[in-house]
Length: 412
Picture 1 (tube, rainbow, N blue to C red):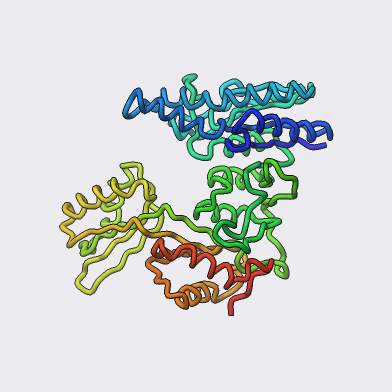
Picture 2: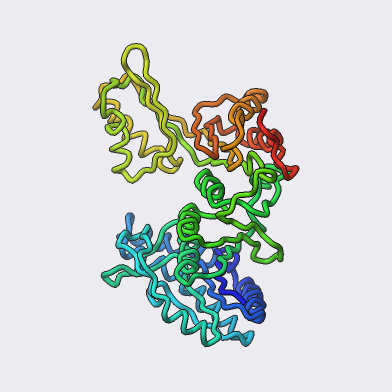
C-alpha cells in the first residue's frame, strides 16, 4: 500500500464520459489498498472560455477578479469527479484550493505556494476517502483566491505530494510517457523508461510540453518521485528520479527538445560601456517579458551588437521597447526576427563525453542548416535556427545520436 497523488489534466477530464473513465481508474488503485489524492484541472477549453468572458467585461481584467473567475473551472471538475467516484461506491470528498488550504503569496495570476495545511486531507484519507483537490489555485494571507499560472495543476500535485510525503506523484496526460522527442515530428521517437530531474528540467525549459518547468523544479527540490502516464492506456510510463544511470548504461544524449515560440531581437552598434546590458534588458524586464538566450559581440570600433530571444507572443512589445532603447543609447540600428526556432540536445552523459557539440554542429551543417545562436550548459546544447528547418534539424539530430535505438552514440 502506498500514498499516491494523481494529477489529471484538462483533456483527461474533458467530458462527463472521460471523468467517469478516470473514476474507474482511481477506484482500481483504491481497491488495491492505496491512499489516493487526485488533483484535476478544469475541463478542456473551460479556462479559455472563462478568460473570454472576463475579456468581454474588461479589456484588461483586474488580476484579483480574474483569479476568482478562473478558479471556478477546477471547482466544477472536482465536484463531477467526486460524484463519479461515489457512483462507483468509492467514498470521495472534493476540496478547492482554499478549503485545503494551499497558502500562496499575493501575486495574482502567477502566485507561488508558501505552505499547505494537510490536516483535513489526512483525516479523510484515514477514513478511507479519496481526496479530490482542485489544481491551479490557492488562497493568500488576505483570504483572496489566487491562481498559480501556467502549469499550475502540475505544481499543485507535486506540492501536495511533497506536503503529504507521498510515495509517488503520477502525472496523467495524453501521452504514455516522456519521449526522446516529439513523436509527431520523428516517427522513431522512443519512450524513455527513466529520466533524471536534471534532464527533465532542461527538457521542460527548452520546449517539451509534457511537464511544466515549475512542477519539475518543485519535485526536484522536495525529492518527489514523478511518473508520467497515459490517462486511458495502461503502461509503466516514464519515471523521473534523482538517480542517474551508471556509466555503462548512460546515453550521451537522452532527448531532443525544441521550441517554435521564439523570437530574436538585436541592437547593433551599441557603445561598449559598463552597464549597457542592464540598460538594454532592464526595460524589457520591467515590461514583464522573459528573456531566454543572450549573445553579445564586441566590434573593433568599440561598439557591441547585443542579441537576445523572447517568447514569440512578446515579440511586438519587445520590438517597441528595443526601438526606444536604440534611440536612448544612440545605437546604430535594431532589428528582429520572429521566424526562428530553438533546438536542443539534452543528456547527463554529456558531462563525461567530449565532442558532443561538435557532432551536433556537423550534423546540422551537413543538412545546410545555419546556426544563429548557441547556448550551452553541462547537460545541454541549444541552437537557434530558421524555423523552416526545425523539423529537419530534429530528425537529423535524433538519427545522429541514435535515439531511436535505445542507446545514443558516443561523441568521437
